[in-house]
Each structure stands twice: as C-alpha cells, then as structure tokens.
Image (cartoon, rainbow, N blue to C red; front, top):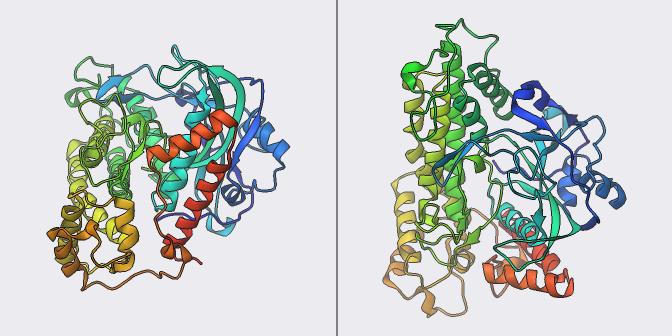
Length: 506
C-alpha cells in the first residue's frame, strides 16, 4: 500500500528508546558554517504536523538539529553490521547520519504509522571510521530527485524531507573537488535495517535479538509478539564464532531458541520477505536500479532508501548497472530480486539464533512466488490495465518483457504510450513498435480493460517525464556553475504532476 501524504497533527514519539542503549549511541550534530535551505518537502511536513514551521524554525531543527518538541533530546547513531557486496562488515553503523526524531502520520484516530526522521551528512559518529561524516550537495540533490521520482511511480520509498546547503568545501574521489556540502533529512517508516539484526546475531546477543524482533513486529507490522518469553533451553551464553562468512553462530551451538521467539521471528521474517518481494518488483516496473542493495541498505519495512549511485535504465536491459564499482553486475537491473532475496536470507540467518530452522525455511521459499505475483501486479499497475487474475496476466508480462528487450523503445516512452492498454502515438507506423514482439503484445493486451482514467493533461504531453542520468547531470551543472535551481525545481514539479496523473488526479 502506497501511503499518500494527508495533513495531520504533530504527534511526537520516542519508541526507539525502548530498545535500550545496546542499539544506539548518543551523538552530536556537526556545526556547519552556513544553513541555506534548498529543498523543503511541504506536503510531507504537513503529513507529520510540521508544515507550520517557519523557514527559520526549519533551519534550526534540520540544519542545526535543535530537538523537536517532546521528541528525542539527543540524536542517536544506530548500531548495525551488514554484507557489502556480499562481504560481511562488522565495522559499520550510522557513520554520517543519525536518528533525529520520531512521529506518526495519518489521523490520530487511526493510530498512524511510526515514522523516523533520519539524516545524511550530519557529521561524524563512532562509526565514521575515516570519513568526514559529510554529504556533498550533489549527493543531496540526487537523492531528492530519486525519491520524488520513485514516489510518483508508486514505489514505497523514503521521502527526502529537507536539503540544506552547509557551506563547506569537501574533497571526494568520485566527483570534481572541492565540492559543495549539504545535510539531508529523510522521512521513512523505519531507520532499522536487516543489518541491525546482523549485529546482535554476530555477538550472540540473544535477548537483544528478541527485543528487536518484538519491537519491529509491534511498531512496523502492528502485531503484539507475545506477553513474555518462554524459559530458554539452556543458560549457556552464546559466543561469537568465526565460522561462516558472517561470523554468525552455527545452528548447532545455539541455545537461545524457544517456541515463542521462533513464532515471532518467523512472523517477522514473513512480513519482511513479502514486502521485500514487492520492493524488488516495484524496482523492475519503475525501470529503477538502486545500485547498492547491501543488507545494511534494506530497511526492516522493505521501504526503499539510501540512494547513492542509482540510475533509471533507459531500456529493458537486465545487465544495466548503476554503480561504476559494480564490476560483476551483482546489483544489475535484472538481478535486483536475487540480491534482495539474498539479503532476506541474511535476516533469516540472524533470526536463526532465536528460531528453529523449520519455522524460517518455508518463509524464505515463498519469496520467488511472491516476487512473480508482485511483478505482475506492479507492471500491470504501471500499464494501467485490470488484471485477469489468471495465467493470461503472466503471458502478458512475458510478452511485454520480450518486446521491451528488443530495446527499440525506452521504458518511460512505452508505458506512456500504452497507458490504459491502448497504444497512443504520433503515427500507426511508429518504428519503435514495428517488431513482431510488439504485434504479439498488442494481440494479448486487446482483451484487457483500462483500470485508470487518462483525463489528466499529462497524458496529452508530447513525451513522458523521465529521470535519466544525463538529465540529472544537466540539473546539477546549472546549480554548480550558476547556483541556478530553476531546473531542479521545474523537474520536481514535473515529477509530481506525473504522480498526480498516475493516480488519476486532475
């Protein structure tokens, strides 16, 4: 379910404190020479009751990090580990960001979702290692553009809440330096990630794993895990092990399992696996390549976040990669479901310290089928046709992928022209669609009814809205060379207009 921003009152929360100090470190924000507001997400500010802040107040809270009323009084750098390109790294955590505040959205009578305000580029923490804890302005601009486009396309994503230029000159190896600095604040359903579970599993902290599992079930999936823990099979302490690439405790050494924790772990894994399958499918339907699908970049809610070397692939190309350092295509466009499933398996390996394997394995085995079902749903959703809910939907999906794989038409152009299941275009003899594969697709799609309205004027535009890397570079060049933000603002307005059209709003 994609959550749309609706005005709501400010409802502060501090639920993260219930986890205890084993999960975070209190930190201080950096003191920046300047705070220049570059982007303010007013519609999501209103959704969490912060829309009434003046720009001066906004800068105090999201540039100087003055605590919000009745909220966390000290920023928290969360502790986690993670697989990075499938190599386990126990030396990471929030290295240039922290959890700044928590709150809820939606009408008070419905409870609303627990949301986190996290930062990127807010200064050094105990996990910065050799980094300066800063974010380049270009990196901040890119993340705003990515999240706005993904949200418009219906992907469950974090929201870029604020971008403030901070007046420092940064040295980077991957872009011309010195380059301008910024601090980003993102709004997301959870700051907790799969890597948050990997850390206590690595150290054999059974009770912390249970606490974390219960917390996530209750606050992110609306379930009461249980009223108490059963007696453990043994009081023997679990010790970290060097066995295995992650250094996790081998199953035959575990003494921390019981029926209640097994059940809670299996239920949490089930929620995450299903949501993660939907996330992977939504990337494919959007033509998006995240670029760095490490286990520390997969939120426990499977909400997309943390955008570094992202790309939209122009064509339906399974080998297209986003990160220049992804030399083997591990996170290529067509391998994203595999990558995300692999990360979910790492969550299961962590939960194996408190759950029996026979309760976790069947959950993992549902991922391929869940992904395929979600892929049909998301692709037909972007196509804008009513599903038949039988084998014809899969046939249509295969025909669509086969036709697009010819690379005669860009993905955005195709879904724009065929929205509602009826091809529109400048000419019946459009060379983009001359291939036999498109003739087959056309035959199959004739049986489908539109599921959307095409009344929005966007559908009469000459070309679709897109977010290809060359467009992003032009936007950044205008900012970098002339401090001209007009293209940035125009692109965001165009993306939001497309989002309205996708939702059928005039």
